[in-house]
Length: 353
Image: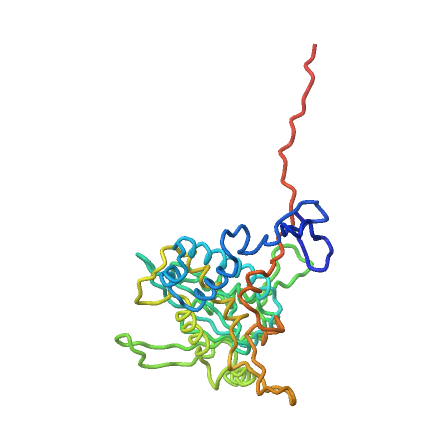
């Protein structure tokens, strides 16, 4: 089926009673809930919305099962559906290179699972408090950080940004490697990769003794202290190199996703549960939750003191506060249909007499 797009006129109503639509290009019909978590749902859609709201606010699965009489497998399936849908929505809205990040902070936290421990790395745009995405891996290595940096690059409109991270050396290697552009010439061969001139890197290096921080060093890896201070003042990111905003976001995720609790009984068995839960909370954080630090003074005569905003509103990705129903019903365009490749037909040769 060709990619359905809003305003193209290639999608029409096939049956209002059955809630089915029709593609005017290929002539096929499909349900109106196609591409959403409500597709082929055997329960009421409102119940699924309530369950996902509770899950995004850290409600344990056992409490939801006891309150609504659902099976644990049903709740897990709904969380997987909602998380996978939120991941597609995040890629469609945020990871399109349309956000002027300005100042980015990144950090990683460890997550206790059944029988093992994994790492979750996430990034945040400080001016808009926009969650840029996250990656989960069993190892805290260069591959994990490189995948996170690739997500940051897919979100940014301008490569001239300030990045504040901790003392992990993989961040410096990954940003200096990913934030490069090819310089095409008339010569043959691979083009030369040039690093973005405005990229600045700052690190907060903490030294520990007996699991306690004894000293903190603020190091400018790329760029001068004066230039970094100017960006921090322009983006409201503090007076010195810090990772306070991403650490606060880590605390928000630990409070909102029950499987991230360090000492609890609701541990995850598989990494996909962490991934779907992370995107469910991340999309709710960006689109559904108002932030006091982002509010603006209301215009005179409006009868209000402040204009409340979400991170997505502050980043210019939307103009209103979303609801969970709107998030789950958001139609992500399907990939373009590609005709399957058929094997070559054998050539029949008539036998010679």
